[in-house]
Length: 435
Image (cartoon, rainbow, N blue to C red; front, side, top):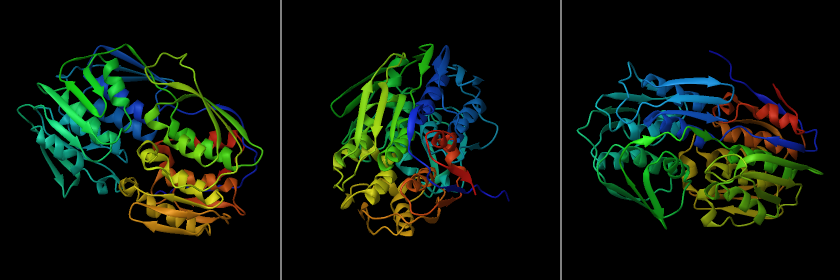
């Protein structure tokens, strides 16, 4: 068995510089899949090449798509809605929940059988929340007790539905939208809370008949036409690690350029500002993109504990482990509630962060839907990543204020979303090495 990678972080500081982060993971997934389903050839600029994205590329190729890579660009020859081919074997999605859930929507409409599986973490994540609305559309899907492996059988066609989305998940919403491309009539999705809307934005770029108003999304099936080029902005979820490292480090200032500033993804920045973070965002859409792109300017700040507003939870869902850490570095107590969705990520992120902070001698109180974190002094120590890339990176960021070095075990998972994390963090003033 290959030994996993452990990292040790000893802060040198300060955090200084002007950098860019790799392409957005969510947008890269969607760009590849919609390019596959469209008519024409698409060039995807600044695509992320993390492990999760490589799984999407591999599965797309197994379905018959011609994809070529040139530097940070990816060229995809579209197959159209009717061009997918039956895969020869089981489709392995590794750790990528986004890949699996979005492909469930696409494969639900095909005239061939497919089997979807993944690694030990992915097969323990809930998939019936995606399967149920697709079955409502006429899909023939069998999960394994609500999880993967998943068998998708041929169907005689999907029908349009009116669906009330109870869980504020962009992956569930996107799976329904993907399936709707193959159906007849208009599908309507009603959402209680606005979740990330990259799929809706990109579907418009690919000439889909989609509209959204208030909390309603309407889409009618039909061919997609390639726009020729898709520009992927820097990933704001990756930028969040750099933002918090700068805020909690002394005498630090950082500029992150060409990063996506989609309002459905900036909840973390808003939370940090409420905690007293000195952060400025500047929209600068010089690059051709339907997404908002700009710069983030961050300076060292004295953070204070807050009760995180409920309306910001969904737009900060992937960055909430960092909010736990920010609470540990803040004066007073930070309360995070209404975040039960964290328990269904790569790990149970509420419990993972509680265990991590307790190891660092930070006082916490765990709830079903969140926690209270009392600000204190982070002592350092040895922690596990719990098989979760965001927990691993968050624990490493804690070294910026730690009394002693921090060692994080099982860090290979960082490659699923941010393969250049160690290199970029060391470039701006951190000291992270293999242990």
